[in-house]
Length: 307
Image (cartoon, rainbow, N blue to C red; front, side):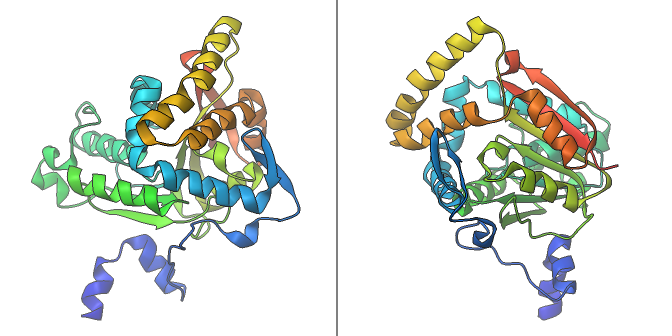
């Protein structure tokens, strides 16, 4: 019985077993010992102790989990799907890639990653992101040409992702509740680290980038999709009016939650601009660091390699 159970454990879990410890998701997700009660940081436009921000961010995503995908469609008019498709296209993952997707609880990036690899294996064009793995054929599902670990600070977000995976027929993913500042994975383990619309919510960007560098193999790639700075003054004026005047109201009407969406809007404005974040990625040790603006800089794809 024990041997049968062990064979069904994903390879990341087997590795952790072999090191003499079994990783267990914590109730809150965040590593409390990483945060100071004395040192302050920002939570949106508010200054709070680091430990308080970690707890507040966790609460935000627990609150928005069930309506997260619906709100993304409404807030962006569906454009977030195009951004994510472009994100995966720029990565262009190949079969047998080992992925860590951080802050990826609902599975949007992980599912796209898997579909791209499946199609690369078949030598076909990538299918639209709403087609399930089961539509690709039983023969292709017999051997999974990927290893995907989704790590998120919010168990609520992970629960939504696992439900979606089951509904769409995805298998072979590991879902881990953990903290980007203290990842529960060994050094030099993953080929690719992705984080989409999540890194601006971490308490300490430098620590999160350092952890990304640590868990990547030499030659591994860090790729981040995040809201950024709109430089065109006219577009920025319209974008700000929409962000502060419409999105919190939408959050209240659709999700019954004004405060969480007010924070999400404010957190975008507190995140470093493209050049500053590029320098931070380089300071973490990454090389060949680049970024690409999407939609006038509303979002940007940042990329770097562990060389």
